[in-house]
Image (cartoon, rainbow, N blue to C red; front, side, top):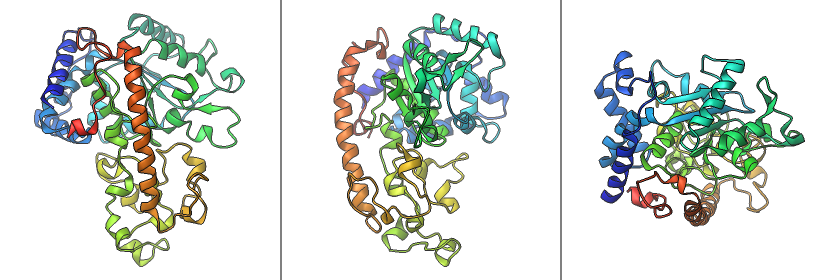
Length: 403
């Protein structure tokens, strides 16, 4: 573990040598200007370290990575979506740390929040892609329509297709992140019959991406993954769907606050019944927590205030591929229909069986992905910071190493 910490220190030392963008204040300056204190920042760093499943020795390194995130150029592209992920990141209590970080990182392009518009914005994007080629992180929000050569989505005064824009931006990126279920798996735009041929960014472009799924993605997972890239300078350990294991390595069902009621056979059977009033398990009301891998039950939403199951509605599985089609109907147990012909079983009252199957499939996928990642790292040395570690010599940090 100390060796990994030393690698992170060397990585951050290199990043510290990079000149910050002109006009970008430090994150601490920003915090102090909004009335927050250094104690608030250290408390946030501890929370983020725990969310990243890192041991306490990484707390000062997470804090340092946050302060150095001003040196990492970020290009955020909106595709076919509702901007819900940007809203998730920005529209929280004022101010929150996600907003502070987005205000202080070198966010070079984001159509939703940037002041420039029209041809001025497009000119700025072209300039950044040329100036920071090979150095910036590309973050995509929204699905990519591929039908008719991408003509179902055109962006900007030049009428460029989203497909062409995504290819252009991704080709010069140091890392590519797909934020939200639309960008990761196609989401609702890809729901059957999907006339536009919408796909997730990774599938549409045929490139490796870091998927941050969820509808919308949780701000902690977005910022945490960005900090992970800042600290380690490479892809984090991923599951079979290219999602960071620290965020998507467990089922919602495993850490659900209503899990004790599931184990005791105490279920809500009708909205508003006595079981609902006592906070019993929502599985028989259609909760998809046993099939859904995400950390919602641990980090929650709205600054950790609550999350859907705590508020009284079951999980709809929005962070899983094809959730709009495969998880419906949302307020009925999947046991009343067979979930996926590959499973071949009805699962009412067999949530653990399905969960164990899904976990086993995920583990198998992780093993395959780990091998593929090791090969890819050897082929894409750009993931290793120049002058840091020899290309292809750094395996992804596994959950075991993080313990």
